[in-house]
Image (cartoon, rainbow, N blue to C red; front, side):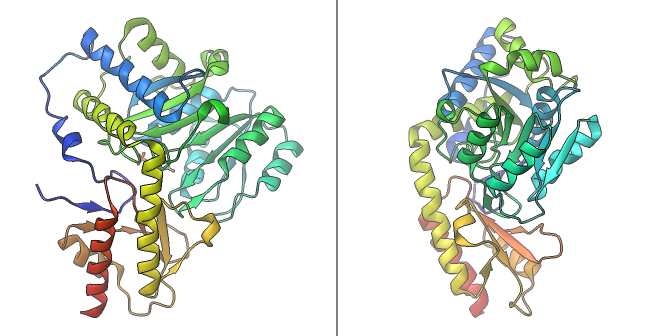
Length: 359
Ligand SMILES: *Cc1c(COP(=O)(O)O)cnc(C)c1O
């Protein structure tokens, strides 16, 4: 198999070990043996997030948006109202889910705005919000929100916190017990470097009563999904069996490397692309202090004659995948360093990109 360098923000470049773990003996997922795997996955996720003491896990056979939908529809009651920070595509997706289910919500920020905690505080105190939902790393722009400050603010104001950690969990060193977030969710195929098909919600012990009362989706019910695994050692519905084995291998690799070390590796990889692409004349979308170091969005203004699709195809033929941008009214493209990628891969990417502009 040719090793592909995926610079799209997940599904990411995986190790051979994670790919090989897909091939297992056939098994009925209602067997104890498989139930044990579900418990091991849950424990592994709590270990990655350092939340063993105070957190619980609900697993869903779904892409990341499934976990987002599960959290919003399970956490927010009929009388509640959630403030959603809409400074990118994924914040906006949260509003769409709320619309579909008739969940009360308000919004703050426009696409690309920086998440100023003071403005969030103002909005939370001047309105009767019960919940705050935001994206830790807005994968649409590459912006990192100040998660510690925002969650601390929620605790101070007694507002329930909901964090989309889709493109951070596994790479960003969380200490959930210290952070004290109420809900945080992610999926198998981003910074944990597993295959696509599983997503998960971590919720604080204190949220159980609220979850039990508020669930309004049949499939995406966080409480029922968690409870079923505790009581019966089974998920409620058929999980993606082989993906689960492969996910466990990816979790083990994450724990072996260590989240702190993975985070250092990501930052080193990001810096190589940042320096190299700026040398090639691209400008970053964001100021440096807002950059996640997980994904880099580049502006195309000032690059007259640059054809993204042509550039993409040139690199794709060389086993490198880059990703288009999603900013409304602003031409961008994106490179993410999520995955089993190393500085030598980034140097190869820059060589090929430089080759393109010199040819
Ligand atoms: C990838 C991602 C999602 C979920 O996307 P899926 O395609 O459903 O897996 C949600 N939020 C963020 C921030 C993401 O990066």
